Amino acid sequence: MATEKELSDFLKSVEKRAFKRSIYHVRDEEAALDIVQDSMMKLAEHYGDKPADELPMLFQRILSNCTLDWFRRQKTRRALFSNLSDFEAPDDDGEFDLLGNFRSPADSRETESAEDTTRRAQIFHAIEEEVAALPARQREAFLMRYWEEMDVAETAAAMGCSEGSVKTHCSRAVHALGKALKAKGISL
Image (tube, rainbow, N blue to C red; front, side):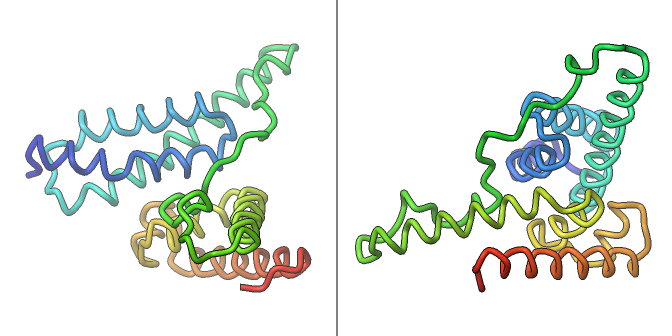
């Protein structure tokens, strides 16, 4: 059984990654914050009595379900109201740092040239754009596997699909990212 401190520490440790994952899906900061907050509340209310080692998987599944619920609500609103512009997500003109845990250009070493710093920033931005452009299930699998560092079984459980589907989604995402980045002249 997770203690209140363990639950609180867990939620603090996942909040930024959960927000970034949500924003890639819904492309609306306020909606992403609501989804993450709702997911955290559901975890605390319904699963706070579970062992601490079960919390990551439970939270990922809750976050996925809350995101799907948001899309369902948006679809219903669009069907009910004729003025769709009130409910469409805004254009993605903000920068969302997929690689936020890595050194940013502002934190670059003194020995690094301005050209290297600029090039790194351009590569990070291109990667973020291409990840955001992936189909939803590929993006979800890719982010869970390579950003959240979940294994195939954990990702499959969180996404509610088979391990084979996770492998397929990840493979397609990696190939699509590689092809898109190569087309932009970026080789990693």
